[in-house]
Image (cartoon, rainbow, N blue to C red; front, side, top):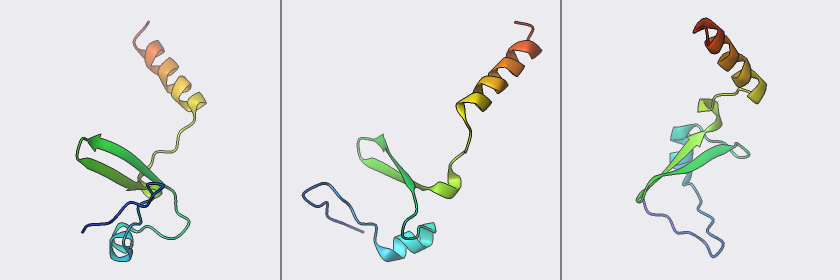
Length: 68
């Protein structure tokens, strides 16, 4: 499906595609450039939710388990 970007680069996701992806009005989505010709739109339900403190804790646990 072809969509047009507006003057301020806004792109609307067609209703049928949004419904198939489970995206509803007001939802947050992650948009990233995969390569030169591909943009990924990832609905919030597929994001990992982790804090920086949790990342540090896991890193410390791994370091201890490796004896470093």
